[in-house]
Image 1 (cartoon, rainbow, N blue to C red):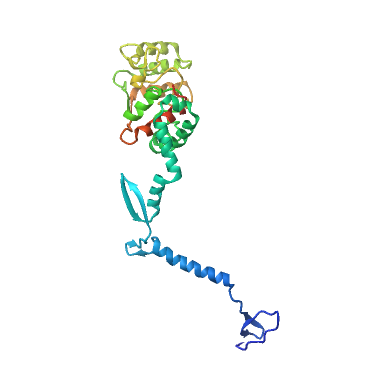
Image 2 (image 1 turned 135 degrees about the vertical axis):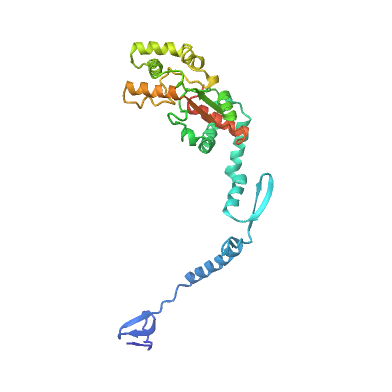
Length: 309
């Protein structure tokens, strides 16, 4: 049961609406604080202004664009469009404080020689920060984040063993022109026993203790007409950077997972399989994707990963 009789209000008591249920249940009449009401009204006004100025309401397959505009440069032309976060990012990338500072450092590094860059602490700090992003965009898909590479697929850039040479000039040439690494397979010219012998010789050069007769036979094939491996890798197996032929005597295995083999028999089998199949790896050039300065920065970064030459 309820009634609408409004009880008298005594001093200090809270005013009620006058509704009473079950004789003693009453509804307080506590108006919202004035500051809260004004704050609420302000949010309503803010929302209306926002709807007018910025993209807001969906309409069919489009949306209200708002009256606010933003201007940025696109391929050298000034473009003005309705405000949106993509255009805001484009403008900030061109005129933001960090973007301006980045361009200043790019221009500075672009005017420096490699020797100056590598010796300048500030320049190398910028190189490491900027090129890490470039490396992640263009290189990490193959060489992995940090440049560790993938055994059997892509070279490790974190050591100082460079198939095509590790000077800044050679690294820059690699980035500009790309590389086409190739080693023919010997499936037609060597039988399984000869393949194992060549593999034994290569492993023996890296201090693996294998059958002496097999090693001797492998050396003859390696440096003889039948194999001719010395023509690319050299008689001492030190490699030839002009051909991208790696050093085979430094116990660094980029294309064959020798360290992961369980025993010497498996090591011989893995190297023999590689010689049997051969390999071809193509790295694209970046002259048409990166500016000269960006290539210079990336060159200095890659050079620093493995200590360079």
